[in-house]
Picture (cartoon, rainbow, N blue to C red):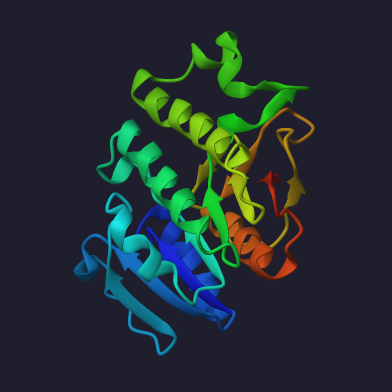
Length: 216
């Protein structure tokens, strides 16, 4: 299985990279600044690339079984650039339909009632700091881009409401559109366990053509 990983130095991306390599996958990591990814591994190739350059995407994707997008708005992208990067990916994948895309999503895309996402609930959003809201709404729009894309092999993986560094336990629950929460209403996941589930999905192919989510 040949994986193209975009955003392999971020909080989530670096964990995904480690999981994929530990499972024996061949990974090509695309970085705007390749020098920032210093990991050496026999199954890892690091190349320069930019999702905002749509013309170069077909050559980056060629020969890859799965594209994993772990790009983040906190890596210098504006919300409009983030959405354009995903639209460029969608456009390129329409020409290479044998390749699958798994994209890192946002926790507030999860539903708290049928058809009602967290980001649509005013009482939830008013408690979120303003600086996080552009990222939240951009993730909401990008999931809709994939849903309307006509692609068959897309997956948008939304984390729990809270995701942060923690333990790699391997114990978690998966869902589809509904927020996964514990008996106290808390919805949490570690970067490490999120990465396990994402890389497992590369082989399991349980959520092709749909979003899914995770929590303890």
